[in-house]
Length: 110
Length: 118
Image (cartoon, rainbow over all chains, first blue to last red; front, side, top):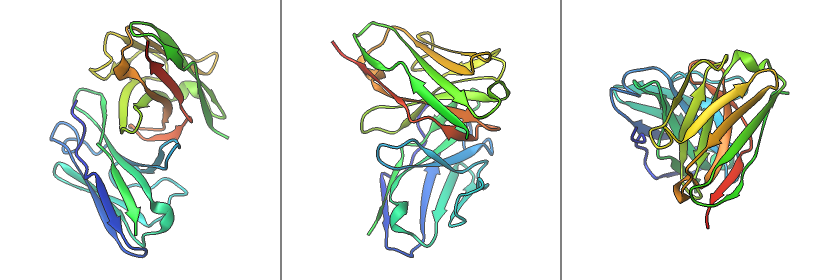
């Protein structure tokens, strides 16, 4: 149950588009479409942004989008805003019927 | 409003035990799988365990298997996490989360803090 791999940090200027990768294996990300993404602000609970690779819950901005290719899932944030600063985690179901999160990416808006 | 409220955290000595609770309101608790997720200070999210809606099935992370037990009382709309043989590595904020469908965790509590220290 190794954590999925995410870059430690990604930054961008307001209005820019950034992409956050999340790399796993064929036993998790690559094997199932149960990949979800969560945003977490300091001291707060995580918030669901994307589920089943590319679906957005009601109320989540369409600036957030998800995709997957092979063992790597990606979260794209377009029109970057100051409030997008925070930590982002991917998560996947695994072949062991357990869950796993990514190592997390800190997004900084310059 | 759908809400989850964790409780039961605190300071416990190494080797000790603790039981966390998660009270659910605003939705039909028994219809949903539930998860526990933890976050050590300054670290990332780590999945701990999940349980089916009727409580008949549960899975655990390797790091807690054999030490932690997840359970639920649907009559009381409450989820539990029984934690035994605690070590410093279990120090974390523990969150409960609702699984809307297929590992889509859409409602989260604010967390309860567990500190394992002598």
